[in-house]
Length: 94
Length: 418
Image 1 (cartoon, rainbow over the protein chains, first blue to last red):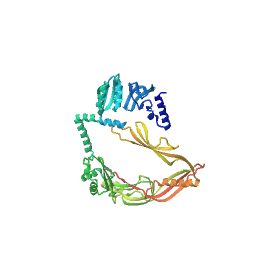
Image 2 (image 1 turned 90 degrees about the vertical axis):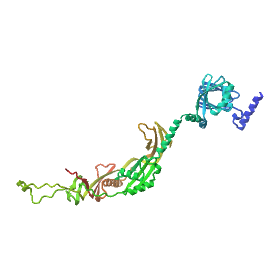
Image 3 (image 1 turned 30 degrees about the vertical axis):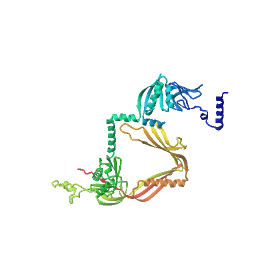
Image 4 (image 1 turned 135 degrees about the vertical axis):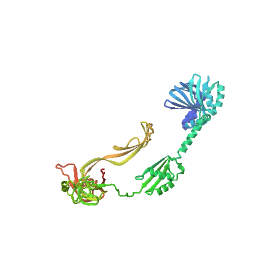
């Protein structure tokens, strides 16, 4: 077990014990999805690909790949992306 | 979000078409620099359309240079652009200003005057007096002193004991209460005719020719005191004489005199009434519980503004009050405000004893008989009798007879034959 994985395990145990939301301690992305029309991605690291059908967003250790129709970036902030359109799938790609 | 949009509108924003190979990089750089981009839409292979604030255009150009993207401005929106466009179209601005000034100045005049409550007084006269007092269509609203106009009109119109002048918007309302002045006796010829059928009890003639006497039975419409007084018979001339003496001139036919008949004819009048009461009665009555609901109806769709969706009563009756904006020409606004009041109802059953029912029926019958009696009538006798049937029923029937002594005469103008 590498040092990095060990650190992660300790952090997770800490967050479980102290009941602190894991997205703060572990620096995880927070995805809020409203039906199939709107998706908020908080705590992102930038856009990798953007087209009408696919949007890939870097969220740290992996990326979030969204497929759909007529995808539109409602807004982009340094730590938040709002995506609109007809969402078909949301994948986590390692 | 709305606030953000509003601020963007206030400061102005642009639609930019960005062309380049590495558009994701462009977006990431912009986001990390804190430049706000929204409504990002891919329109082509290497083209995206973004919206951004006016203040972000300069730093965005810098990013564009480093990522190798080209800009093309598609649309400028927001208040700064609207103002600059308006500056070029001075006449439009002038027109808008003129419109506002016109609206304001026209609304500061009084255009309509309504008169309420006048009966004998002609509206033209009231309007004329009001105009003399300073209130007429076309006068400036702020110059009209309601109290002064009221005072002036009260002085000029002695037949009025209350005047109120009220101005709301461009409409002035004059409210009047007239004094009831007894009008002078009418001088046109008239007869007194019977209003009701009855037995004449007394005849008092002031003016006119009595056609009935005590003890006569009259029917409605029959002339009691005629306004036509026949010429007196020429004395000494007997019909037989004149026929036998053709040489003598026939006596001149005097025209009958026409008068305004006056007098009192008092007669006994009978009234009949009928009342019935069920021994066992079923019906529906309100319990007193009610709820109200306010809906707004927009083109066939009802939206409840106040009140519950479901009605908590098993039986109820609804009172609907629909308020609609007045239509203009053939346009109407398809919005209605509907106020509904739901009154709870329940069915009930009342059973009465025979004596109770009889008393109630008697009162009903008397009431129905008395309903036709005039105010000045003097009730002489009241009689009630049960209408009895052979086989007993669930119903009690009563008949009432009321006898009165009253003035049955009423004036009717005579149409003079030419």
